[in-house]
Length: 637
Image 1 (cartoon, helix red, strand yellow):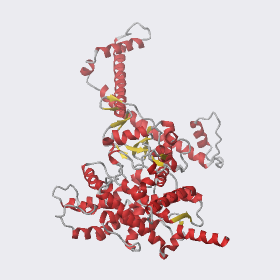
Image 2 (cartoon, rainbow, N blue to C red; image 1 turned 90 degrees about the vertical axis):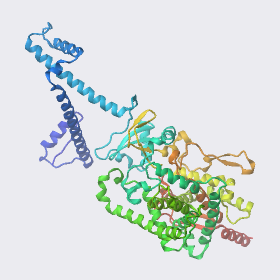
Image 3 (cartoon, rainbow, N blue to C red; image 1 turned 120 degrees about the vertical axis):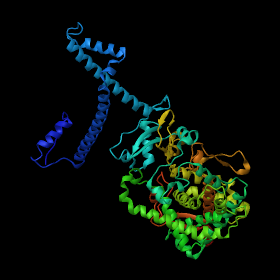
Image 4 (cartoon, rainbow, N blue to C red; image 1 turned 90 degrees about the horizontal axis):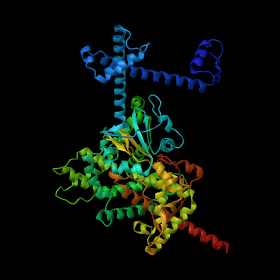
């Protein structure tokens, strides 16, 4: 091979020549990383050279086609052009006394006409490119900056740091500003990293950014068409209809019948959860020998099926537990990024992965059809104009003569909302993990729970106590802030602009809410620390306690605008009820072998989803602990 010692004065060319010349002389001592670096630079140089050559060929074709016009047409060149050419010919005369002779005059004239034509063609091409990238309509706009990418990969390599993609987006915003562009694989993307511009994208220009990324995985999870999903579909009239149907059940008004049903269901299922946790069958869960997460997910899934379908299932039902597990697998899957999302040509290498997604989708649909929908439809009375629940509302709308929904639309919408229980189960687990790492937080939550129980003489603190439990709710919001679950990317559905910068149709727009959740400009110093008090302020109403809850405008855990999460009321309600029920009855601690650092590893910002198999926790009954404490004190006396 060769030995290469690069000196300061070496050029790339001389280095490569010496490497070739000495190829057979002696063994190579060049470090592998240096060799790879030079090989990559050589590859990038060749790729750039090819691009430049193609551009020059295309430019030459256009120039040639213009220079080969008929003489009669060339002769009709404007006076200004003729004058310009004559001046150039005079300037080229070595004697400076005009044309030297007729032959030279003709050749100089022809050469200058050709040169002028080339200049005009070049200006035309450049003008078109500038117009295409810097104009929308007739108004000039600013051009976005951003990092340069690698061939085929774009800037994907910049997102693989330990902090995840959105922390990388934040780091890049320090260099390129609060809005910048980059290429991710085959996708043209823009990243927006400030509340002002995120609000412009989602609210002011929400109609221009109603699309979603066309990722192959999303299609597989929803019967081959991501538009079957409410969260992953493009904005359309169909989407408006589906959201309108869901709104009264998923975002009910305070005091409405639906809100009353939510409160009732939450109370029933949280009491049921505490009974199951206290049973002998759950002793291994309480001791931390088995995971708590499956039990929590089952409880919350029953909240959703009871409220939306008037159906509930036994905790030991194997089919129900398997379906709950699949929903959790899908929730984890959707919250992960895969290379195939931006490099669809990798699909042959993801065939097994795609088959697994199809199997999950098929199994969930089979369970919902067999155990819920078919049973309900056989008993449905079309004459009954008042639906009992969300399932009734969907089926009655499907049977109405002016419906715009198909059978698939109805089933997938029901699946979408039932799957929302996974978000709540994972969020509750994150709350528990944060509280375990901060014992003083657990003590304050339990103080609020105890006050609520004494005030109403109830077994559990529940939704009726929520106004008097601002700290518990602040813990939930702080968990959402720290988890910083990304807002689903939007896609421009037409040529538009943001902050005066041109955004072309089909551009994927990432809304960097990581910056909103951790930026010092929004939260001050120490934003990386868990501190629920950042959502609290002194109360002006003594009857509501010493503190009141405050929610900053830049805190957007459920997005905003026309595509805000329609199920956010359910998420907040059921999460609060579950957390309050657990801390009313149990002290929570890490299982044996689970350290604070182990828990911290699961609390990495950028994802509200936990792996299906995650950390274990120990639950100790507070009543039992009080009894033990009294016994110890008696013995001591």
